Structures are given as C-alpha cells and as structure tokens.
Amino acid sequence: MKNKPIVAGIGELLWDILPTGKQVGGAPCNFAFHAMHAGCESIVISAVGNDKQGEELLTALETLKINCEYVQHNSFPTGTVTVTLNEKGQPKYVIHENVAWDNVVFNAQIISKLKDLDAVCFGSLGQRNSVSASTIQQLLKTVKPECLKVFDINLRQHFYSSRIILQSLEFADILKLNDEELPVLAAYFGIAGDLKNQLRQIITRFNLKYVVYTLGEKGSIILGENEYSFLESPKIEVADTVGAGDSFTAVIVAGLLKGISLHKIHDMATRTAAYVCTQKGATPKIPFEMF
Image (cartoon, rainbow, N blue to C red; front, side):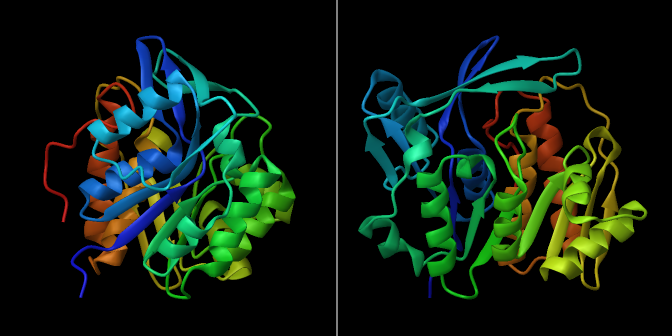
C-alpha cells in the first residue's frame, strides 16, 4: 500500500516575470508544490523549450524538489508571464503565447503514470492551444474512475471560451473559482439567484462533489452536496497574492485524499493561502505542519 496520495498538475509551466525578478510559475506547478508540502507525491505534466530559460526553470523545479520527470522538451520557447502588481499586491498578467506548455503531447510516458494518480488539477488557461487541450482531455478520459479531477478554472485575459469551460466542467469532480469568475459562468450557463443558490446550481448541473469559492480578503466557501463551510480570511500584510489560490486548492485536495474533515481542511487551506500572500512569489516554504 502506498504511503502518499499521488497528484498531478497539468498545463502551464513558466517564469513569472515580477517587478522583483523572475519566479517559477504556472498554476499546475504551484499546485504540485503545495500539495507536496501537504503530504502528497506530486508531479507536473507540462513542457519547457530547448533554451536557457527552460534549463533554468528545470533547475529551479529541482531546487523546489518538484518531480520534473513528466516535463517535456520541445522546440517552442519556454513560457513567460509578465506580472505587475497593484497597490494591494494583486497581480495583473500578460501571458505570452505559442510557447512550450501550449504544446504538451499525450505520450507513452504520461500514459504510464495515469493509473497511479489519485487527483489531477487542470485549468482553462492550459487548454488555450488545441495541442495541450487535447492532451489534457485525453488524460482526464484515461485516469482511473476514482481519480479526483479538479478544475481550477483560472480565467486569464481572453484565453477561455464557453466550450472549453463546459467540457472541463463535464470532466470535473471539483470546481475552484473566485468572485471574478463566477459571473462569467453565470452568464454562460444562465445561472441566477443569490451566491449560495448559484453555487448549488453549479454543483447540481455538473454533478460535482464540491465547489470551492474564494472571495479574496472577504473569505471563502466550500460547498458540497450536504456540506457547507465559510471562513473569513485572516487580516494580514500582503506582499503579493501570486499562487495563493493554487496553494488553497492544493491543501483542499490533499486533505480530501487523506480523509480529513472539511472544517479542518478549510482552516488549513485558509492559513496556507494567507501565509503565501505574506511572501513574494508563489512557492514559499510553508513554516507549519499541515496534516
């Protein structure tokens, strides 16, 4: 019997070019890092280019102890994102196109790992290009039935469509979204009513196990078929919010796989995301035990 749940983040892998310098980035990578610190075995399924940026990114991942075995190499440039921060430390992104992670192929190496996965986290951004979109959807069709499929919607710039969101929701067991993303879904799918009612409609319509909804400094909600948890966000001094949502998702997934109570999971996810907000970059080492 294996000791740790095995989880994968699939999609974008890149350098976040911040005002203070470049940091390892991409939601699947951030998710994998924080899931690892929450007691999972984590892998990243993505790609880097055959360039200096790609070599440096793999070196940085190894320093973070992230498994790079399933990171492909191709002839496209390694992904980069230009990040600017407002006065509250909230990021604005310019995500450069036609890069390595847009062109992840579904190969024998990926297939060999699918039977081991207990959870996979994916988003809409990783599916902006048809090559990676096809790979992500093939992976989701091929994992074992009990593998937890987590759609962290991650709407960025114009890189999403109702078709990709609908296809992703039909695969998903869990949807993670924030207060800026819910109105987009509501408009796409004709969802109305108060907040709790909208979230309930999403669960019912797409046969989800949970919706995880974040409201920034106001708090967060985890809603299941027969479970509800709301927690306020702690008052902190924000350095930047990059990666906070990914850490929140990772801790929730790790907790569910470990059979932890929803309240304890929610509390730990909130504490972890708050700590990430007090640090620069998406992957600070978490200084406390999780589960």
